[in-house]
Image (cartoon, rainbow, N blue to C red; front, side, top):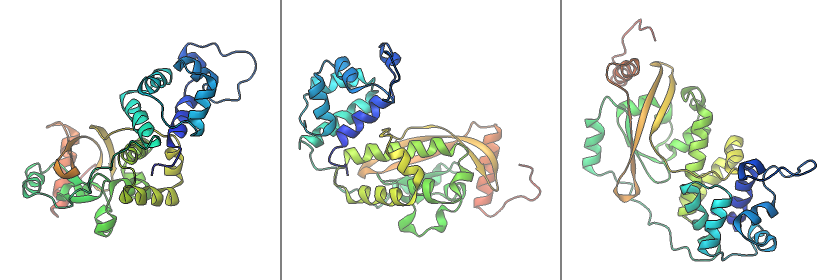
Length: 286
């Protein structure tokens, strides 16, 4: 990862999502066979010749300059993350990519382990760059139903989203969670060319999940960031938590799930903590 013509694939995927009206262009006569902008329209908007743009998409031109990439970003209306991704792919294509970050430590520092306990009853866990679970407090393991039943080497939140049977029921907006997970992995692949852990996870998901394979072809990119996340927990009921992502040293990150004190969502967190401790009350209406 990435594939030899990831740059061309990304350009095609991004122009396919734009209609002429989005770029201030007339639709033109007749029926359009192209699902988005045509190549010649994209080239004109970016200030490029059509021949040069075609070579870019075909992978025959592998060294576009910074101004050319910036012009493409404007033409394709890329956001900041997509713009940075475009430059990363161009660097790969030109052979300018340095080695990816060194393999991160899988050891969780004592201070972080203590922090997981300190934030209880809020669920919290620590992940690697590839979303392998390194440590979690009891509330987090109770929240993500069935994750702890997997062998430790398979406990990975992206794998859980796409391959664990409990995920679709637990994650009330599973489609959105799946889109976020695939886009995060696409960003990680661009920043870690040749990383065997990233490549192995992508290959497993492409083989095991048609939904992931479909989302992978969209070439969406996105870093993990906090947002509200609704759950349908089999024992704690329906509630929404807001999670925050804290980036740690050693290539690790920590996610903490919170709720407004005094809210029904916070009451559900209290119940979740009781379940984790083995003190689930009887006859609770959820």
